[in-house]
Image: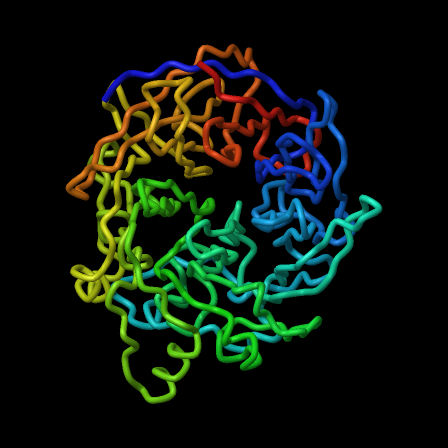
Length: 468
């Protein structure tokens, strides 16, 4: 693929961790504004060259960074309704203040293929053994310019602190529905295999028909679809399962159809970007009925990313340092039977990149943080591509994130990727690439960078536009 080099133009500096980057047109305005949602609970926007506050929900956010400063909770999703200019509706996903629990397991989890008990754990005592509660809310920008909460759509009890999704709310231009991406619940290796359980809300891509959502302002706190009221169940469909953790979903229009791009954050081996055009979502009511009848739902055309059995193109592995040779690793398939079962029914990734890669034109990654289609022409080598970001290159000093891109092949086969070079000088400060976004027609790309991975280190963020 073509070698691409870009510049970075600073747009906003001295902000907190920028987790979501979106643009929209405010009611009564005439131009798109860039909105920045920070993990601690601020929503900012750029107006006439100034950083302005749109909404501050920091008091509603769970206390973050209590264990060393790193955290994957907070304000995780922001989406503007397709007709936001007229109706003022927007949607938030965040971790709720005052909901901290002890967690679902006393210790960190690692599967042992020699011990079946570790392969068949169940999440029990869910009402007391959980980490926190996430909420998805509908808000409205009132005629006086003040945002106000309208109602809660979902309350989700989460087993662990991590893998809650990020950039988790996006509207589908295909269906007009709100798309929610949920992580597998956290820890590591998905201890309870929630991502493959059809009734678990964790580890899925879900569509919510907000136009048909019932007038329930305080839905119950749930972990499974069958715990929801029937009137809410009827507004939900599931696009995909087998999600570990996902930095959102991006839609790229190609003639009269859309390519969907979704990334799955890896465990130990690889980070993976998936693409698909055709899919058949399954109504939640059908999933519940099939479970009640102890039968399989009609899953032809249903997307399965393969986790926890598969990590990209590879069976999920446990990696140990070889005792006789410290330069080599021993890799053991963690869930062999599950990997065999899913070998023919999972979606193959469009591309993957390794956590360790010694090739000079590649990089070793840490965690996928953004996947975004690009349709602009100002950076010709990227036109029609999907761009992705990684938090930090393995071994780079000072720390630097990574930008890369790939294309969908006409035959649908996997493709290689190419690193995007940047000419920006970050100096001696770390530069973690924490988010990626675009404008409405995907002709501009925005990159969120932070000087730390700790949410408790404040005002170290900068948002850049990626320019030729």
